[in-house]
Structures are given as C-alpha cells and as structure tokens.
Length: 375
Image 1 (cartoon, rainbow, N blue to C red):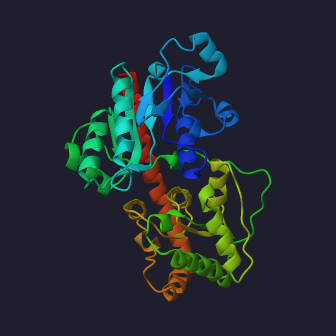
Image 2: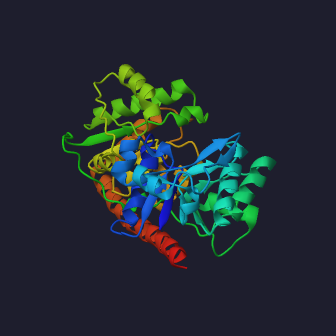
C-alpha cells in the first residue's frame, strides 16, 4: 500500500511533528510505503524517514505528472520515486490552509488532484485541521469541490466543523477530531542540559504576518515575557519552532535586559522533549502549545486564529490565552498566578488529565482511517 503524506514540511516543526506522527502510526507495517513531495525535506532526509519522492508538479496552477510508465517501474523503485497513480491513500495534513486567508487556487489544486486520484481508486483523508472561514465566493466554490473529493474529513475544532457543515452539510464521514501529535512520543536529544525551572519562549512570526498585532507590540510582549520569567526565578530560553521565526528571535534577544539563550533543535521529536521538560512556557506556535499542554506544562499563550482558543478550551485552560490588546502590566499578574506553587501543581494535574482525553480522541480518528483502508 502506497500512502502519500501531503501538506507537510521539515521547515515548520509542527508540520514535521504531524509527518512523524503519521509515519509512527504505520510503524512495523511491511506492506506500507510512503511518498511525498520534495518540501518534506532534502533527499537524504526523505530517505532517512523512508519517504519516496512523489512525481508531482504544477504547471499554470494545475497538477501534472509523467505518463504512468515513465520512468519504468524498476527504475522508479531504484531511485525511490513514486508515481501518483500508484497511490492508495492520501493523508492531507494541511493544518490550516483552506479558507479566506489563502488563495482559492490552493483548494482548487488539491480538489483537482484528488479528483484525478480518486477516479483511479485512491482514498483521501483530510487529517485533523482547521478550516474556514469561507466568506469569499471563490474560496467557497473551491473548498466545496475539495470536500466532495474526500472520503474522510476531520475538522479540528467547533469553528472548523461549523464552517465545513455550512458548505456541505452534516455527513457520516465528517467527524470532529483534535490534533493527533500528542500520540507520538518525544525523543531526548543527546547533547542538551536544561537548567532548573526552564521556561521555553516560542515566538511566531505569523502573529505579525497575519496582522494579529503590530511588530513592536509583539516584540515588546516577548521581551517582557522573558524578563518576567527571569524575575520570577525561571530560566527562560528562546526556542524556534520554524525557521522563519529566527529574525524575530534575534531581535527579542537583543532587546531583552537579561541574557536569554537560544536553543536550536532541528528534530521535531527532540524539540517536543525539550518543551516537555520545562517548568513553564510561553507559546505562540500552535504545535508548540500542543506539545506543552499534552505534556502537562502550564503556559501563557497568544494566537492569531480561532484554533488556539479551541485547543485551550479542550484543556479547560482558557486563561492561558493572553490578549495582546491588554496592557503589558497585566502580564505580570498572569504569570504570577500561573507560577503560584499550589496553582501550578493543579494546572499540571488538569492538563495531564485532559491530555489523556485528547490522546483517546486522536486514537479514535486513526481507527476510522484504518477502517477506511480496509474497506
């Protein structure tokens, strides 16, 4: 069975965490092989993960590939190549890529591609992800077609579920399911020693890019968080979760009145381990926040979309979300409340309980996919 791992990338550690989680679910299955586009990572990285290169390209916004017999099957196997028409199942782990914030062409290309594959017997699952909003007519049309080409659809939260059902109505193959990365175990890095009371600060350039806050206001918030963590006896460090956050991290480090190290880890599973060892955290990256909450790490958070609020609701922890329109003077009170010893212990226990519920629901999602495969 050939499985395409779609819409994942090594550059964003949340996307890589989803990639690794999908690989882990099928671990030990000798009958399963994987393929993906080149943005999964450099060739040596794809080979190390056991992911063949998919013969997929776009021309003028449309999907193109080689004829089925080109190159010959024996040569494809030798070179680690997979033809799209060999795919049995597509797992689309876009995360948050279909809605008004993105061009309709993205959903249109996926819809066209899936339609072509499904005409040849391929099955398609839209993995747990956020959807919407769908107010633009071109986006509504494109996403409606996309949804019609999926065998399973997993909106990740209430807002996404409502957006999907508004387009196509309720259906048995549309099931709400949370992010699935809490199921995968972390890996301890070989060469890292975290200080006592370590506190990760995970920025996100998208907070500025998506106009959730002005650049200066967000940088000031990050600097203040680092300084307050230090004042409260924590050992803060900056932890990049995506390569595009590096310039922002460098500016925060330069502005902070305390010495704050930057911890670089390129492996998503080891990055998750680092987050799990922290006393506390501040997360602006969605999967950074998932890794913190699912490992029982109390956190302050910020977000640029509804997905952060819904995630925190699942963990009964809405007070984690800090409104960047509030005065920074309120941040000290929020951090002090989180770090109060009795409250901190209760938070850890509550997060751990809800993490078990989260993992159980994610396992149910995989059961539906396994049933789809065997049907």
